[in-house]
Length: 335
Image 1 (spheres, helix red, strand yellow):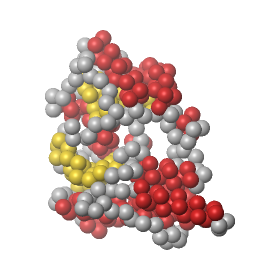
Image 2 (cartoon, rainbow, N blue to C red):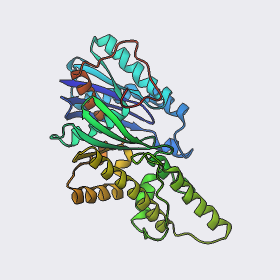
Image 3 (cartoon, rainbow, N blue to C red):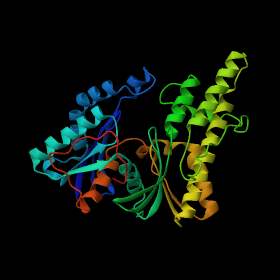
């Protein structure tokens, strides 16, 4: 079964065709990073306008790369939630129009579910159940994945997402957007024990995350040092900050896996590309006897191949949509 899918939840316009949820036939992405970098982050109005300008071209490129026509696909998947509402609407309306014109099934896909599905494309042998850690600019979730379409959130951030903390710390350090990759690069040159940053916890909720206090600690250190004209080694600060993030994440993942009696761990989302987090979770998995699954770096960020993969399993579960489908800015993965 060949599924064509569209992803436009934030600032990437993407289209892909995937066979049986596992094999990528084609995948095309138009990114807007360079433009949004001018503003230090994603500007929603600009993002939605660029999606409108790019989507037809990206779809054409996708089918040309696959050497297929619209008539060769069996269904159409699209990200409908969560995300920037203006951006989502571009993809949803394009997919609805295509579905109506081709008389092909329409499948609504949750963005976080598709991030998890990126691992199905990387690891052909991976099947639920497993514990999934989703870490990105807008989300930090621990999810008990019981089946391809059955999810239970067991932990989530109470304030900033981990990617948001990376970006805000990077901005304060003077690094360009997106800042996570800049901190990752700088941390490799620094001393991770140079600064003692806090590892915030949520009282009464051992599996929830909190990154706001850690981010604030970085900002306060920089402000105090600036006021006192004390130079700060950026590499050391990045290394220490990243170590704190790794400690927080690793502690929650190991605790959740043991609580759920789960020995399969899946990591997903844009921040899963961070080299220190990948290395730390590999070490923790080896230490605790877990099987760890990480997506290919190319599939960590937003793309449509992961949407097509999850759409296949949604369709198998008879989760199709109709012309009343609308975009939703905020929606839990276990809706």
